[in-house]
Image 1 (tube, chains in turn blue, brown):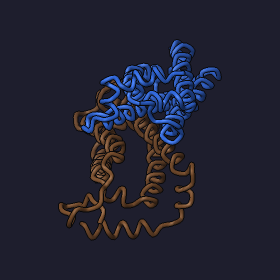
Image 2: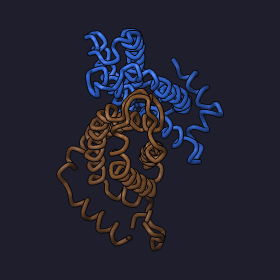
Image 3: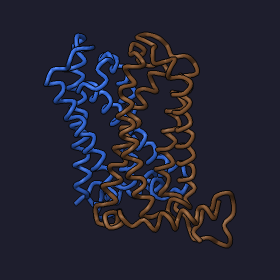
Length: 166
Length: 180
């Protein structure tokens, strides 16, 4: 059903370039950027979530707001590099249920971040006080979501059924 | 170094304990996933500390931020374990891979950077409280740490694209990058 779409996309110049360019700045670099972005978005969230859960309790929690731009830079780096990879291999990703599972984990991960921003970082009193249960639940859920996204993403290389349609 | 590489290959190749697991359907993929989780813990927790050293979030006392470091070390340990499992399962794919050589080089420099930090800077910066900028020396170490670990990620990611091919004649150079 989606075959005409896949064929159209896979014959675009960008898609062909992602798949076939042999230069090191092509596919390998896009993958590297995607991994660096992952480290920053999943890793910085993890550091923040650990703080919410009580690790490094003498770090003024509100200061973690300053790391949000770094975290979001990692996220957008991955959104862009991820879309480029998707343009290169649309059939491979979109015919693999694992890819949708990865997107669900990422979506829930973002939802957790937004909820933490709202329920935890809106309360300046939490700088040194224990975070209420609700915020801690979001932090735990966030850790689980990013771990899930990493696993699902890594397993994409092993679970696809079809590489290209053309 | 070529003899050393050959020795390493045969020595690591003789370790069979993890092979049945690593060659099972899900062994390698699970270890790779854990390797990426460890990577994120390292970059997230050590990177956050590095950014404080460099000058971000200065309201955080250095000693307070340092409590995140054990979690970064935990990530590193996960990666040493999973990385060793890859290495002993397919030693030739790493020992003769130029990207792996650079990955190890960057890890060694990153290790020296850590040693320099704890020997020459930590004693001075651990007492720095809220709102105090770290001295230039420590800021440079923090920046170097971010750069080096990012480099380790890049060379790790590049491993796939620099897999060694069979040698065409005698291997040349300081380290061999082909399979004899």
